[in-house]
Image (cartoon, rainbow, N blue to C red):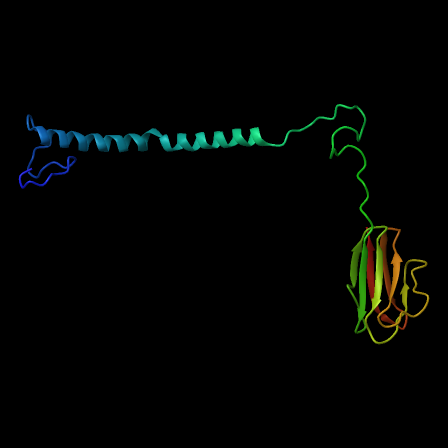
Length: 180
């Protein structure tokens, strides 16, 4: 403290020995600098950061285990009884759906439609000319008469398979229904 300004404790003064015998402030500052480097070296070589990472992962696994949904076992002895949402027993069939196939500009859209057995397909005529829909592979799949502009014909597919159909007025205007 030569000029009245406090000097940092961890820096030895210029010209001071590294390990002076009996010079109070310089001895203290040199020891502090050495102990600071030893501490940082200890942290790097000890694996303390890896220990903290492992500890966090163990705590995370423990919390996931504690807060997960409980699994209720089926103790009733009857299949399909007891556990709500149980996969034991038959799964209920999906509700039948109604799909729409539109006919516009001499094209059925969509040209390939995948449905489930029991679903209904409505064929809507959006062209200015009447059409007659005739099935190629399925008996009874026929609109029987012309479907005028803005009207529709509906058919429920009960059997599984691939069924093609066409406009009876022009056989190259065709499409397919795939029933799963």
